[in-house]
Image (cartoon, rainbow, N blue to C red; front, side, top):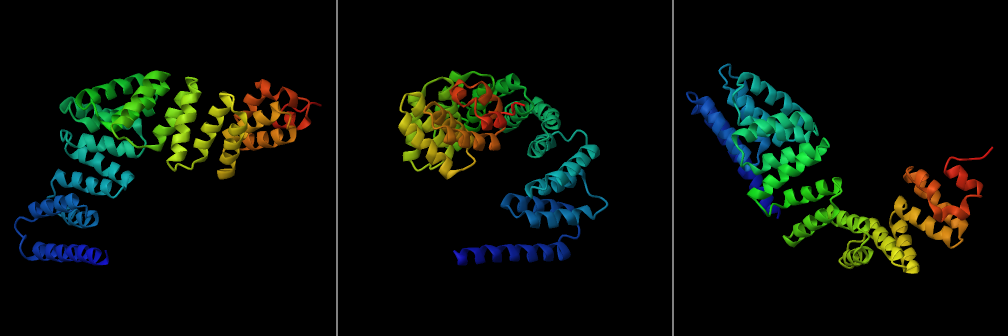
Amino acid sequence: MMMIVALAAGVSIVEYFSGISYLLFVARFNRLDYLQHMTERMLSKGHYKLAKMYVNFARLDKQTVPLFQYLHGLVLYRLKAYHDAKNVFEKAKEIEPFFDEIDNIIGDNYIQLKDYNHAKPYLDHFLLLHPENIYARINLAIAEYRTDHHEASLRMLDQVLDLDENNLLALKLKGSVQMRLKKYEQALSTFQYYQTLGGQDNGVHFNIMRLLKWLERNEERASYAEELLFGGMDNASVYTHYGDALCRTGRFQKGAEMLTVAVRIDEHQAEAHYLLAKLMAVTHHKTEALEHLESAIKDNPSYVIKAKYDEDFNNLRFFRKFYRLTEEVRA
C-alpha cells in the first residue's frame, strides 16, 4: 500500500516539474492552449491543486479568454470552495453571457450552497438546450423539492424516470416527494422498487418503517425492523420502531424491552422515551412514566402538546410534576 502511495506521489511530482519545464521552455508561443490542456488534464485526473496552479498561470495573462474564468470556477467547485466558485462563475457569465454550457455547473454549485431558488433559473435554461440531461433534471427536482414545490419536483422526477426508469437517485427522491404529498402507498412502492434494484440507504429503511406506521401495517413494520436488527443494524431508531410496532400489535412486554434498549443505546431517543412513558402510565408505573416523559420533552418539546391530549396519561394528570412538564401548573 505504501509503495502505491509513494508511486502516485512520484507521478504527481514528475508531472508538476515536467509541466513547469514545458511551460517555461517549450510553450512560449502557444501558452494559453497549453495551460488549457494541462488544466483540463489535471481536472480529469483529480489533481485539483495542480489544476489550480495552471489556471492561475492563465489568469496572469491579460489576454486570458473567458474559458479560463470558467475553468477557474470549475477548479474551485471541485475543491468544494463553492462560495468562491459562485463569484467566479457569475463573472464568467458577465464576460460571455451566451456561454450556456456553464449554466449546468452554476446550478449545481447553487445546489451545493443550498441556495435552491438561485439554482432553478440556471438549470431551467440549461434544460431548454439539453432536455435529456438527467442529472440537471434531478438537480432541478431537488431545488423544487427543497423550496416546497412538491408537485413540480414529482413531474421532474417522472421525466427523469422516463429517460432512465432504473435511476436510483431519482427513485429515492421520488419516494420522499410522495411522502410529502401524503401518497403513502405510492411512496412505499417506490422505495421497495428502489431496493429491488439494489439501492441501499439507511434513510430509505427509516422512511419505509414510517410509511408502514402511517399505513397501520404494524406486523410488517415489526418484521422489517426485526430483519434490520438481525442484519446488524444496531440502531436506536430501529429498536424504537420495533418496540412501537410490537406494542401496537399487543406484544407489550417485548415492545417495552425493545424501547428500553433504544434509550440505552441513545439516551436522547425522545420517541422511545415518550412511548415508554405511555406504557408506564397505563400500567401504573407512575414514577417511571414521569421520568421518561421528562426525558422525551427535554429532547423534543413538541411532546408537551402531545402529552396534554394523550389519554394514556389520564392517571398522571393529578401529579404536580405532570402539570409542570406540560406547562400547566395550577396556582
